Image (cartoon, rainbow, N blue to C red; front, top):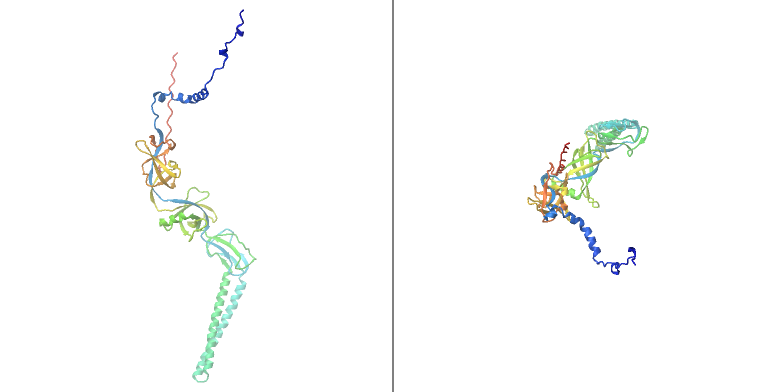
Length: 412
């Protein structure tokens, strides 16, 4: 009896599961991971089995320039001359003679203190001086008569001596009266409060009718002809200024809304000691303010040269590599072999870094792009970049894309 095919018995050996090797799964995963590498090796280079070409890098020549070190600072503008105006005599303010905030000349009348009491004092002392002079004339005449009587033996020596002393006393009284009169006249003159300097006056702190004394500030005057910019420098700054030998280094200044450093002045003051807590020393530069553009209190950016001119080798900042605590550049010779040179970093000038140590010479090509592709002992393919007038490399122009083939006309 024939059974249906679906119920045909399967041999026991065919139903038994196949035995799998324990290395089969790892090997399968390894083959899958290595498949892209195998495919990439089937290209022309892989097919030929030749070595890959040298890594491309961009190089630029090191430049040599004559430089002066400079530092930047933050400071505040101060008036070269500043006066708190006070009356030199006490009294009632009689009149104010200026407009608030006006420019005033030296000696210009600003306030008037009531002069009448001082004028009366002058008149009183003038009368005292006249009386002292009259007494002196009388004493002189009496002394002359006594001397004639002494010659005629009609007066004693004691009387003559007393009259001589009276004459000298009268002369002293005249000197005292003259001194008191000079003081009174000065006080009368001081009732006219004048500007001791030329500059811009503030507002009047005291108006007419107020009683003032020598302690009351009437107003303030800030000189406008010159201004100072004060700032703090480090100990190294101070030592470099001394080493340069220049008595008055140039200082350039810019206000908050200005680009660059358009204003030029001179360093005119260095403090006599450093602050032991901050290690800073107070410096001050002087600037011309004949145009009146600087106002005391404004913030200022300052730049000062801190060394004498010197010759230095410079490379672009991005050419500097770091190896732990060392700095280096990579020089590529004519043979394409990279050479590592340890350098000491100096000042940064317009994107170019001063390098010292004497291991790099001007004109040698240093790698500026592609440092990460360099392997010691493996040659590279350098592309020399053009540089501008400061030595900064000019990026190479991108290669033009290949021209598309011209379309062919279909023949009908």
